[in-house]
Image 1 (cartoon, rainbow over the protein chains, first blue to last red):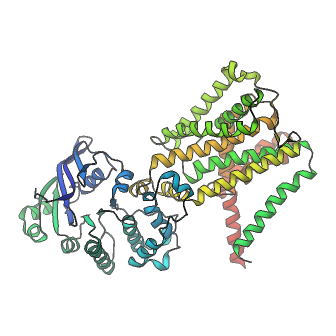
Image 2: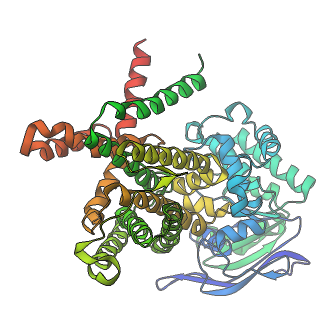
Image 3: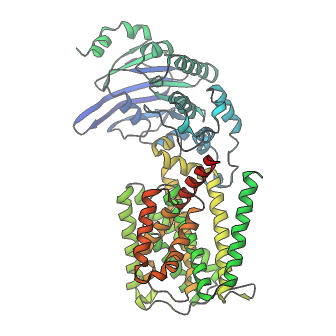
Length: 251
Length: 314
């Protein structure tokens, strides 16, 4: 695997099996600060399992994870979130019963003050400006007070992404941001991600099946196949790699 | 008149009614109203655990009982009632947090059984540890308190104590729901995995939901003891926990007013159905079954449905 200089996030030899089936066979995965890394691979290659192991939804059987130089192996999801790691899920997940504004506040409120202080804090914890800024960026301003469940699929997808970004995470893991999104909205999403990466230096690791989208966005692409890293390199290098083509065709 | 004024007026009317109604009632009627106020507090607590945090608990009567016994033991040995009530609340808060731990591992009917077993355990302790609780003989002669030298011994005065407590607890409850905590509870109920990925601690909020919900039952129980003046283990069995569950579900879980209506139904409906003599429990059961089939969101849900239909007809 390619050596990443000055990684902000680094996972080493992550292994995980379900029953007797090894889903991840010692995957190492590093991301440099300010980088956009694409994670691709055929269905069942272990991409989502890897994200879940890295972000506390699943416990890895083996391996270590570090973030900004400190060991974060085995941390719970909520602790990782507060440390500055954001994520979305493959199936979009918003709080359907809450309004769009409350979804956004819920996405950042636990980063403000202590648990006890939040009982007596102002209801919106001074997040109103940030919320309006996000609503504008994701073109959801008109829907701010609507219950999230009443939004269209595409709008919920935007909200889902906005929630992952609300707390200004240092690194954001996105699981198929292009899934089920119309082409024009996809352009918007790509633009927003590039803009964030350029303006605030936000680092991204992105699982994606839409090759045009991910190749256009990523600085570097990592290919996973059968629970192991097959290769990694620039989008052009990966596109030309015969092993990648083989893995996708399943030869 | 906007919605806010309407709501404020409605609230004022309800409080005024709660103050005026007992003036025309005999002692038994006032007793039932006092019971309603205390049941409503305990049901409100369960409503936080169940309706807002989404965790089933069949142990609310156990906390109600622990609160009652703490208050009875304290006040019969000379400790002030005004100290016994917060003490009962605090004890049930800690005990409730402890009972919340299984909820971090098990959910739904498994959790129902864990909490049910806890209720049985508490009942057995109350019945068997005679040296402390008096066993089946219970504790009698529980004194009613006085406030600033004014005795709350008379039924009406004691009812106003219960009503005042209900108001205070409801304001506190409302504050919790309006605070960022309320939003975290809602987020966790909606989607725990997503909430965790955004930094919401499942552990902290689940334990808090149990602790606060149980504390409310403990405080209600602490006032229940001097209301009835004699307690034994019988009112604190699993069937009372089921009654609290009924109050929350029939009233409408996850709504502020639901437990008030549910508690009224459970305390008053059996009285209203007395004319039917032996059949009243059957009628009651039938009414609950029909309601649950027609409107699973309870009586507040039924009211919402009716209002929507009325608005459409306009």
